Each structure stands twice: as structure tokens, then as C-alpha cells.
Length: 493
Image 1 (cartoon, helix red, strand yellow):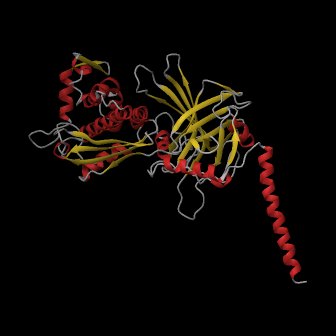
Image 2 (cartoon, rainbow, N blue to C red):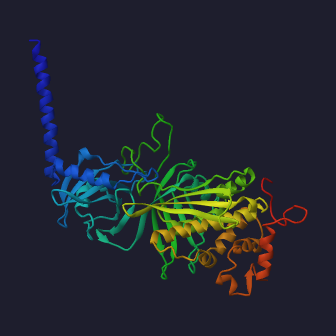
Image 3 (tube, one colour):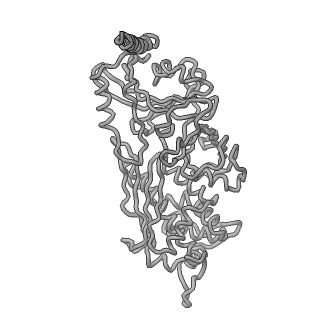
């Protein structure tokens, strides 16, 4: 009699196991899914691992291999589908799901992608099989939203936008910004509202002859820490001449690092897609763009730190330049003081592109400010040199990516970036527009953009080229009494 409960328990356990196994088979039948053979799953795992970057700066999304299944696409491709961790979306009308999609010949894997489906008033969770079967199709019945196609290292490969199931020409995508970037926006002269529920700012386009355009941010929670990552659904509109007319950033979610054991860094409830939150943010995660100040001289270090970290609207102008030259590449710039190889006031050294599977993923460079030069220069002059070298770095990156490396750096700066540099310096230091332009032209006087003209009109006044040379030199040197000819001493504030 004592054995009866054990026999009953064993029978119940066996029945449960059979039921759960049958439920999975029934699920396969209902959704027209196939079981993935161990050999084919191993092929997908090997393909994935062989192409996965070891660079810690690149966001890594981990497949949930145990839940893989197979399907046939409407294009006749055999696909292995592997779920991935999902994140919370805090907007009712937007839903997101992401998967690894491996193309096979039935025996081995020939291609693999991360695919994100973003539904606009379309529940992607209830239509997963429909979306996956129409992956890379021009028609997805009833679907309004976007499909983002990445490699396994989360580098964007392609994107398609749909309205009512048909391809459209909208420019829509996912973008991640840091909380620090949002703090700068909140302190800009275009808005002082906090928390940031809806805000707009005008952006000076670095691309000539495109005019300024408007960026609007909707639904952003206030008081986010600088190390939080905010995910937006971004709509870009273009004018008839191809220039950006506006960008609208609609808040989707945010994640914030938290101390171990203190809980999740994301909201835990609400509408839209939700999940474990164990993966990087949707949209490929946040690529690190880092300028590290390693200058040993404490006063000059303070000057450069203020230039990098000051929450001033002028920083947005440089940020727009960087965005134009940067796209989604991780950037690591180390700033040092020392001797330059060519006895220049500043110099970019050791520029390098790191590639993963032939795709550029990270740009690294060292910027050296000549110690013997900048110690006698003003804060304004030193920062002008620093920004000049930062632009050298980003322009060099563009050349390294396209493999030509034949860009005339100074001519490019002279033609496109003098005005943004001048606005940056004027906003940071409060100097006159003329002085800001004079400092921005320093180092560019051998370009045709400078040499081919006799005078410059700045602020409604006409100046000879010699006026600019004299003004910039005053910020870079000292008189016989040892005092600066113009500008602010390092460590004076």
C-alpha cells in the first residue's frame, strides 16, 4: 500500500512529460514549423560562433538555442529560427520582437542574421510566423512597421519599411542615445522643459548647402542617469532636394545599469513587447563613442575636460559633425600631451579601423597636444587645436573605411566645418564671432578655401585675411611680460 502513492506520482509525472512533449509537437503542426535536427542546430551554432566578435565594445545578443524551430519562407528558403532575449517597450502602439534567422540547405547553414520586427499598431508577437515566413519579401500581408536586418554582431545590414503590407519609402529606424546626450538637449536654448515629455531643437546641418532642420523628442522620461541608454523610433523626412527636413524621435524604452542584486534597470510592467531584458537594447545596442582625456598636466587636463564635458549647446554642433562622419562605428580617441612627430601644435597618431568579418566596427586613434606649445597657449587656443585634431580623426576614419585614405583633411575642414567649429568655440567661451572664426581658420590657411579669397565677411563686417591671422596668433602666445596676448589662462577657473 505504501508504494501506491509513489506509483501514482510516477504515472502523473510520465503523463505530464508526454503532454508537454505533445504540446510542442502540436505547436509545430499549428504554426507549420519543423523540428530542427541536432546536426543542423550544431551547424548554426558553429556558423554563429565563427563570426562572433570578441570585441567587448560590440553589443552581444545571445541565441536561445533550445527553443529553435524550422520554417519554409514564401521565397522557398529553409530557415532555422532561434529566439533571442526581448526587452520591455513602454509604448502601447509599438511592439518589437527579434530572432536569429539562419538560412540552410537542409544540412548546413549558409547565412545568418539578427532580425528585428517593429510593429506600428501591429502586434508582432501574435504574427511571428507570418513575419518570419515573409522575411525579405516585398509584401507582408497587413503589416505596418519596419524590418531591421543585422549581422550576428548587431551591425545593420538592411532595413525595410511597410505600410498596410506594402513596401514604402519612409525613412524609419531605431536609434539609441545616452542619458548624457539627453541632458545636453534638455539644457539647450531650444527648451528648458523637464522632464522631457516633448521638446524640439534646431540643428545646424554640417552638410552644405542643406539648411538647418528640426529634431523633436517625444515622451522621454525626466531625470535619467547619464549612463542610461534610451531607445527611440526615429522618423526622418527629406526635402525635395534630398536634405533632411526634420527628425522625430519617439521614445520606446530605456535601460540603466544598476548595482548587482538591486533589480532590473528597466521598467517592469506596461504595454508592448516585454521580456527578460537580458539582451542589449533594440536597434543594435549602444555603440561607445569615447574621447578619453589622458593629459598629465593638470591645468591643460582641466581645459580639455571642460571642452569634452561642458553641457553647452555648442557641443551639439560638434556632435552633428561627428554623427555625419561616424554612423554606427564604435570610436575610441585617447588624448595625450607630449611631443608631436612633426613639431605641430597637435597631431593625430595611430589611426586604426578594427574589422569583424570584413565589416568596420571600431575606430581608434591617439591625439597628441604638443606640451611645449599648449602650455603657452590660452584655453581658447588649446581647445581650437583639440577640436581641429578631433576632426582629423573622424575624417581619417572615413578614409580608412572606404579604403582610399586620400581625403584632403584640411580642405574638407575648410569647406564644411569652419562655421560649426566657430559656433562651438563661441558658445563654449563666449568670445566674439570674429575671434571664433579666426581660431577656426588657424591651421587651414594653406587651403584654397582660404588662399583664394582676399577678405572674409563675419558678423556683417569685412576683414582682411591678415586680421584673422593676427587674432588667432594672439590666443596662441605670450608677450614679453609673460602674459597671454589674448584669452584665458589654463587653471584660471
